[in-house]
Amino acid sequence: MANSSSITHFLLLPFPGTRQLQLLHFCLFLVIYLTALLGNGFIITTIAWDHHLHTPMYFFLLNLALLDLGAVSTTVPKSMVNSLRDTRNISYAGCVAQVFLFTFFMAAEYFLLTTMSYDRFVAICRPLHYETLLGSRVCLHMAAAAWACGILHALLYTANTFSLPLCQGIALDQFFCEVPQILKLSCSTSYLRELWFIVASACLSFVCFVFIVVSYVQIFRAVLRIPSQQGRHKAFATCLPHLAVVSLFITTAFFAYLKPSSISSPSLDLLLAVLYLVMPPAVNPLIYSLRNQELKAALSKLIIGQFQKQ
Image (cartoon, rainbow, N blue to C red):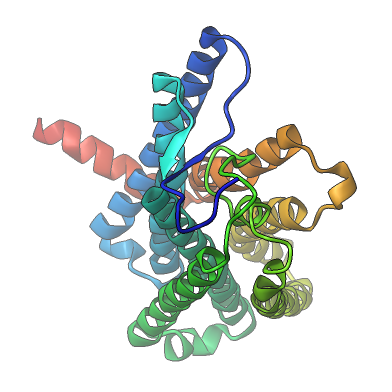
């Protein structure tokens, strides 16, 4: 038993098995982490380098890549180090930092994905007003608002979480400091203090979700009115990457946090955390670049140009 004033560290979920399995976990996380670093790094470099990609859609994509890099770098390296050193410890300050940064990057990414749905709505439903409605200053303000809302949400969430007295031990059933796992350590009478903030966050998330759904309903209606099949295909192609990323983000995160407690288990929680936290930053660059000819052409020119310089 411990209380929050005496806690100096937490114990993260150990990956069960032999030393060989721990090293396998390290190698798997290392491959995924390097994939996320390279994929998002290429997107950031390519968009910043090629002036033809200095458009609202690619500006928001650059911000998404930055948030993905931050999210995966917040938790995965610590888990790899723990596996390599065969330890479970994370300091109290390190846990607070993880909660703040993880919450910030995830919240900001959700707000940014909501903003990107508006970008796609204007591009397809209001193409003649695209440059007016989404000028460079407007895009900058929208991206800054997403980052600022993420920071504010993370500050309030972290402060509320760690203001609770923790009296149920120091062991967390997750490979990083996840808020629901920390709340399990709080005293039962104090748990209700967090409820109002969880409800407020859920309402805000629902509003963003409704905005995305309404945007895509309008987008699909506009696309279906395009007379030529080629035009419809081109319009759908610009929306599918964003829709795929949103679907991956929302379905995994919502199921992880809204699944019935009757089916909850450490192994299932671990799998879901990997799906919504570790995999998207590695998969998102592939989703956006797979059928994006402009991005692939710019990336090819960048790589060929670097080889020619050498």
